[in-house]
Image (cartoon, rainbow over all chains, first blue to last red; front, side):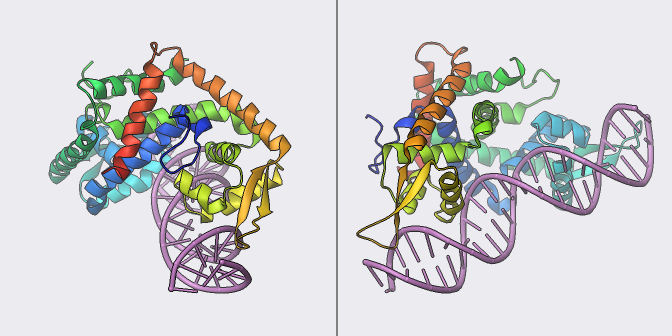
Length: 152
Length: 152
DNA sequence: TATTGTTATACTCTATAACTATA
DNA sequence: TATAGTTATAGAGTATAACAATA
């Protein structure tokens, strides 16, 4: 092992690059997610929105966008789609008539739970080659990378 | 710690999701890369192309696209740009007149080496909160995820 | 003045399909 | 017939700026 991948290409400058590996790993993960959820019309981004609303009912669109670190303008089409699927509903906020409070419908809750089971099951494909505790370690280390930004 | 992030949002369904963490970590990494290389007009994708050609001079565009797992049609604009920056050159292949052999120019080699030093230095921001050997372990684990696809 | 949701817009990335010139 | 590079095109994803309603 000195920079060569199995296809005979020398990856020397990339094989020890965190960013390159993160991107490739994410691409693989996306394929697994896609197999599990594409037929439901759900992308990773939509799933993350459902997951946030599931555990934080009543949030505004802007609050969800902040939680997921995307622009609030991107939420409009996303919530439109989820509302069209009848899994999310916008309720007019009483105290602030500019904003909506977001809730999952009853079927939206069941839908999200089912999706979550599929995603968790899909992830088990990755744990087969992990030792005990290795996944928790990975999640913790990724967290440290994520927090590196806001903690300086 | 039971699903809450520091902003008061409950991330229960996401905090143990590999895909979510991979994406967020990659976003943070991209910011660091951007600070280091954006002024040079280089994105992570362009850097990966330079890195491949650096260690594998003479590859065709298609070979590079296969090495990086992107469509060959995406290579055209990328190589156009790198050629415009005079860091890569297309040389007509002798044996197969359909294809080009890709090489770094002299300044392209120096440019790539300089970029590599910047990227490696930028990555050190992430190693400050890693224990000895943890980065190598992370790279190895990400590799196992990446290989999970082609190895089944 | 500031903020929420919205719209219009644009830019990047990426993939597909079809073309051309070679093989 | 198959392949390399190219082009046109389209779809996601995401960001900015501006606007109306409301705070």
